Image (tube, rainbow, N blue to C red; front, side):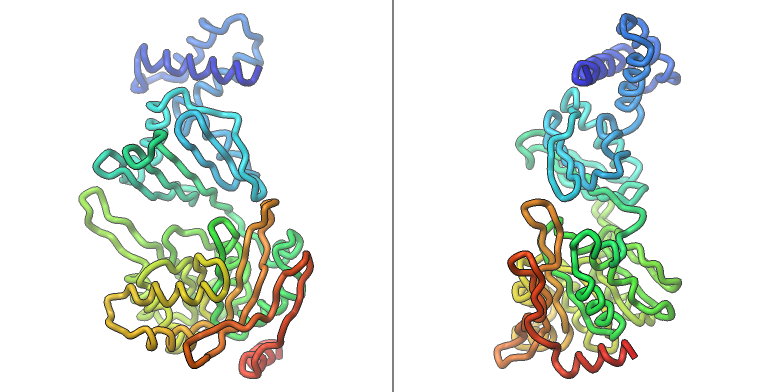
Length: 391
């Protein structure tokens, strides 16, 4: 019956558009009128449900409205008008909704982008945006996408998970939580690595809670997701170019500006470009205890990727100099992964050590064979800083 109601809602919505368009002053009254006329045989409860569905398609984000109201949904993925998927608890599954047509999907995309001053068309078929509630949106349309418009919405959680909650969920052990808390309090520079959807930002947000309240923290993000609870936090967000291609403010520009703002710590939500060099410089010039995330498949790969990103800067530094910067800046790499069952877990923690050929990692902690294993102790220098933080 639910599928039949959905098909009827699609049909009535299309009829409303054909008859008078969306510009009528009293769309709500017309919706109820057409439902009473075309679906008068349904009982009162079913007609009310039908009115609600048609209204969702007329005023809000259409079929996506119930998905975005569901607190269990972390991500909504629309692969054309007939294929909608959601992520719940780390698992991707089909959603029981569809769009009536490609035109309806495009209409929803326009509803999302227009208030944000963004648009997509054949000349500019890609767009990133942020909804008023903080959710991140990505849109790509033909000719770049072959199966119709593609819409991805990553939900924004108004309250991030605490480190204690991550322990309860199995993301980390209590011993590891205590160790990482000491590392943050001890002003050790921490880089969190992992793949897409592995929970890097969630872990970064949880660890940031261990920064003392008296410090001035500057956060820099491509799309604001962090929710630090300290009283002295300055939040910066990059800005894409406007419709005329002007006004862009990059992460790199914000990192450079942050150095003039007297920060005690700099938190970069994700390093993904030439800003890597400026971040490394900040970490080696008095901004100890900084935090960031990076896409990588292992701690060793995270360092190599950081080197590559730093080389993208418009500074003719040799690779050896960049590697020296990485070795001097990053002290601890926390690697997180998402398992096949959807569970997100910290699977490795490594200390960065200097070798003749550049920085390398020494494994301290690993999740192996479904249990944690502590492989080695911290170096004397970092151990002393952890001890001082605990004192």
